Length: 127
Image (cartoon, rainbow, N blue to C red; front, side):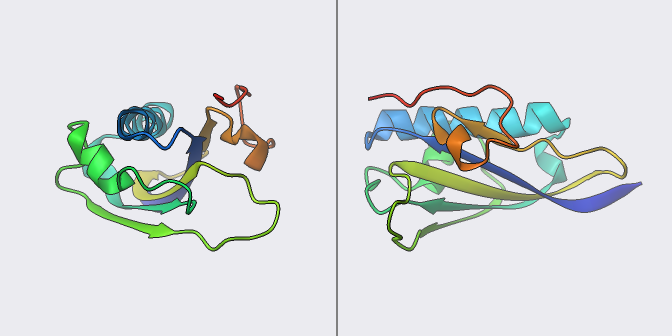
């Protein structure tokens, strides 16, 4: 039996159209692969973006990568807080998953510092 779940993810990137497209696709693919999902399991995907990233909307980035064409996507700018990590895109994916299977959240490309308790493969951010 499937149940509604929420998966979290985040990545850091350069304020560059191609990098945002590549990183958005990589996060999406990792969330699906690590959680055994197919696109039909997804209800919606919401992104938040730090104000210093304005090269492309992550929703458009995902679609330009050939993914998420039929999904309900939404993006918003994050509020600015002192000492917040810069150049970050966060994701909240709502999906149906098999009951009893633990969620795998994905933090990559330097965003692991946001949730070290959930990061499996810490990496240093690019430049």
